[in-house]
Amino acid sequence: MSKKQRRFCHLCGKELQGDYLLYENGLVVCERCQRTLPHCSRCGIPSRQLTATRGVLICPACRQRVPVCACCHEPILGRYFIIGDSPVPYCEECTQTRPRCDVCHVPFLDSQGKMFRGRDGPIYRCASCLGSAVTTLAEAESLYRDTQILLMRELALEIAVLPKLHLVERAKLIELHQQTDTPVGSDATPGPEQQHLLGYFKRINDDWDIYIEHLLPKTLFQAVAAHELAHAWQSTHAAEGQALKIVEGFAEWVAYRVLLALGQQREAARLTRRSDLYGDGLQYFIGLEREHGRTGVLQRASQV
Image (tube, rainbow, N blue to C red; front, side, top):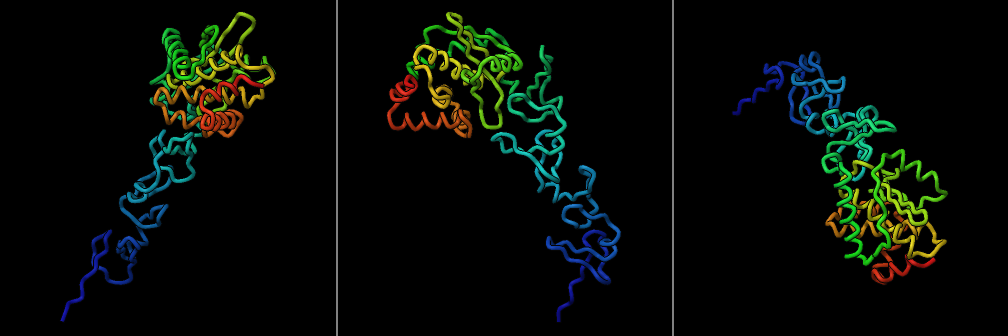
């Protein structure tokens, strides 16, 4: 004859005398604990270890399962947002109320980034973008010349005149863009989530100038410089009347090739995911290179 095993409530430790509940996770709860203890707002299980999170109580198991905001580091109980191609989530509150990086658009706390007072308004940079930012004109000019050398070595693009480099705030780039009827010479951006101007090429007779947004991360700076230097090359090699898809697609292809030459495959791949004029033009030239090589690309970039 075997004895019936006694059962105890897992929360109060007392032997079960009457009704009890058995939860799917194996938790045994007596009727009194079920009635008197607070319940997790997510799974509904009573617990003595609930913690307050965003105004509600949740148990340790649920706290481990829910995503955590990369900005405030609090568990996310409702909607969350993925920004760009990074897999980390951001809660709705941080996304809507925190300062956001002007480059990658992620929200950040004061300890995770910095706000600069620019001539035309505040400039926001998260710690990641700021950590690799080009901060001085001397550093920018060195990278700029390195990019020019890459264009000559990797793509045989010889630019008749090296445009003067200017580091400017975004308001200046927008102003320059608005002075023209077309977006020729505008930005090389890292993805569909970022459509603002980052660079601009301008030529008036013998005055050649390239404007690039101040405080860009180094890799992004070189991609933008490559894009704008491609426009400088077009100003003496390309036929007039080219479609914008050809003009901007070729410049984006040059930026794409420079990123690959720098070993930045992830950043290069990001350019290919654009679904606008720049992305369509880039895909056109990638396909052209696949069929006819780089010689075919340069020939097409020179034609109407």
